Length: 495
Image (cartoon, rainbow, N blue to C red; front, side, top):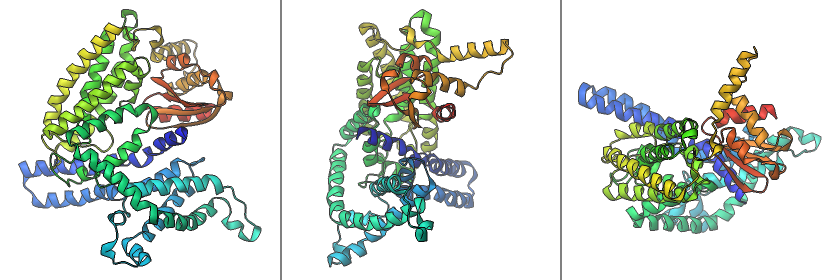
């Protein structure tokens, strides 16, 4: 079950990866409008920009469909386009059959008497998730079905959308009774957290970080970031809708952590590294800290100490919750489409609904100092094995450089860095014959092996892995960073 949920977290990246496009269209539009109003004053330019921005908001409006299609595609065994079509068919059938008018007719009541759960059915992300997952299950079960010769045209993958259409009629019958209960449950949970105000934002931030190792943070995020129960923090912020100082509270506190706090932690780990390993540690920590600052992708840096020093990770989760609490308390808000890095910060700065976003920089500088001194004190006092404090940190980059030099000296062509890294990771995973399946998400390789006792974590880390997670038997996750897609593809070629 845990493996299934983690695979779902990976598949979440398909629809979420579209959001930066929406942010660019909307965010750059706000920047142009601000410059135009301040210096140019050409009214028609604002009209053009607003027209372009509508393309970005169109993505946000279609997010539920994107989840249905993305999960249907991402959770299937061979990533077929037929699975994506199945997801679209399933979502369309369910949302059309559960329109308030249809529900009112079935229940024999007036449309105005239909519950609020069905008023939001058409663009509800949770419905997209449910239909996408069911579609993926149907595809994996029936995509190889063989029909009699006279129906052979509809065999295999072509059969799945047809099966899905009939299946979704049954699913809709279940949702007619289950959906109001489920919606009310999630709605009350969201309202409870929202009712706690800044404390609720802090609790959300704490559990968001604490769930990162399991991948279950995606489920938590869907309640607050998307239009699952009406909070829709990301969508409302990008569309500049909601209440200034409130909309964005489930995003704003991440900026001081990802842009400043974690780089401060990286500097502390560098300064506490042993002299003989400091140069190797710097190559790892500098790259991961810069990635966190610029893009908000923090997993490579977090995994560098998450398992080596779990005490530090708990401190990190607490500080994240505290940062969310502080930003929400003072109503300092900014938003993101992908993660809380400098790129998203700049794009959101000129959004009219942003509230004193410059104060997040001030808060970030304070958190840089807090992370630096707190991490440095804890590492030194408890002698924690952070990067650079034991021999396992020997940089894979240095080894690759040596391999390239040796190849050049011998007249051979050095392999690409991705091929070389993939080869070394395969060795750490027990060799090609030990590999069952290879997949990946934002920063992690997700590998199923035949025998997990053959996996050598030390070898994986010497090959440049930032961390290794074993969520279940024969299931290995290797954190390699933002270049994970290239590494995964090279591994597939080698296998």
